Length: 111
Ligand SMILES: [Cu+2]
Image (cartoon, rainbow, N blue to C red; front, side):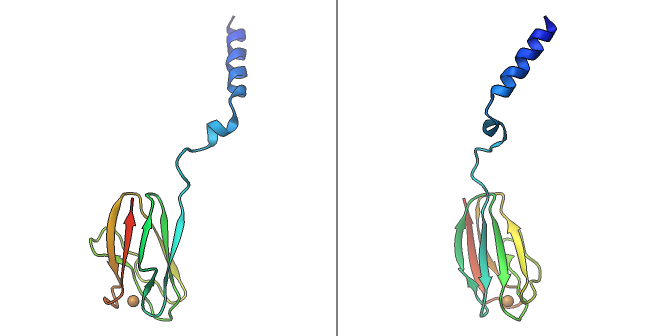
């Protein structure tokens, strides 16, 4: 009796499509690139989805940062030719700037 039900259990488990077990219904997270070039963020205004990552890629020789004005996040120093990534797990609108060059500004909207 026990053997029978155990076999029945495993048989029904095997019948489940593997995709249904392992796939996640949520959309896969995306990594967006914001280039830092000529002392400007490009694009300076982007909209992304919750869970996405933004890669700040510094193409200048000078070091830059991307610091959220609301102090929720910051990249820290990004040296020339380096990049830093920030993942956004909650919705919000973030105005950011470069700590060394406050005229450099950008905006990220997460929804
Ligand atoms: Cu800068």
